[in-house]
Length: 166
Image (cartoon, rainbow, N blue to C red; front, side):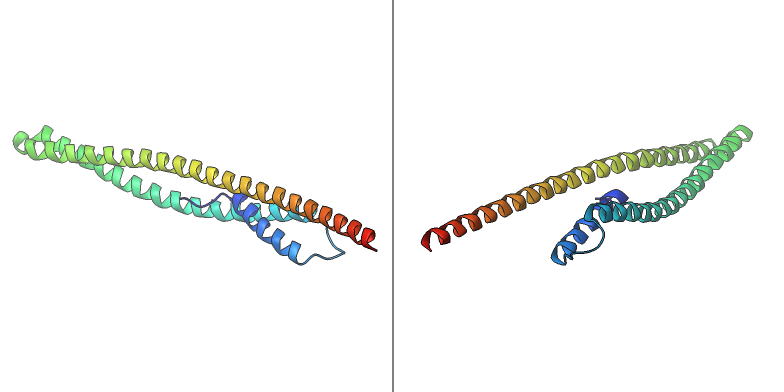
């Protein structure tokens, strides 16, 4: 699976920090929602910049490789086509090399198409996975809220029982 998007990475880190803050609560300081929004924006920007640099490096490397192979194939086709026009003696060899160069070009184009399909599949799978994580996180928050309400109710009932006994 491919790496998560910058926004998804930021959400994950915020969840980790949220757990840390809940464990270390204090009376003073920045409101949690404000802090969360600021942290999300900063982390998203940092991750986006990092991914932009990685993507640019990968695209440059792939582009150079494709350009080199395509130019070599086209030059081969042109050279052996010219040889075939000048002298028919090398006709079979020229035809075989020209077909080989054409097949190489076809494979390069197929690889680029396959890369695009794989990228789309990985992006879709990653988005599904993060949606499941979000849903699970929401369920946990709801359960936590119910637990606190139940605890509060239990404490109130315990206090009523203590008042009745006394």
